[in-house]
Image 1 (tube, rainbow, N blue to C red):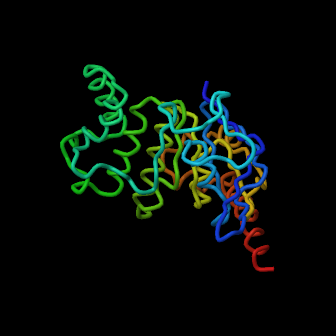
Image 2 (tube, rainbow, N blue to C red):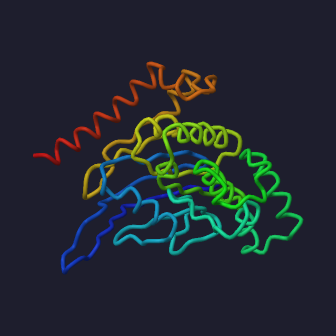
Length: 265
């Protein structure tokens, strides 16, 4: 079981002698093997939520828990994928993927087994000895995701992982992530500003308000996806043409638009 819990979480930053409330009373539970996407206006605290779940920041009030344990620091039960690929430029694809396993003291034979498995799963075969500068942005992000997945984490935390990619590569990576999430599910907290991406990938979407960030609404996508059998469509554009997808996308956009209009008044 891997459940992420935000229990009445506040986050206040102190700057130039003043307090800035970034998050206010966040109450959220990401269920075991559930994929939850968080969207909201810029500066609403989306990434702060992810960083607190990772143990990179701490709440000013309330608690963030994973498996009922209060998060106080990073741990091997949680893997993080950032927008910037953060690969070691002097290491090959194989060595980049292996790095975390070595750090955890995983035995050599087991490392080899796991790496071969994730390389096949992420379609990285033939690139094992390539260096990051020899790879496209999409391939580099595949390596970053493989490096996270190979650790067999309970929780995967993703902060705008496809934000730096061109539109065509982004679509390919979204399709890859859906395939991976269905085949090898994890508890995922996924931060994005792209509404279509959130609707396509997530089981539920958390829509946040402008600062101070609060949860405006939580939208159930999984029930609609399963009822309409979105997974029968292999291409993202076919899913995005479905009336049920369009309805959900429009609903999220309206919520975000209301936030923007509120900022202007």
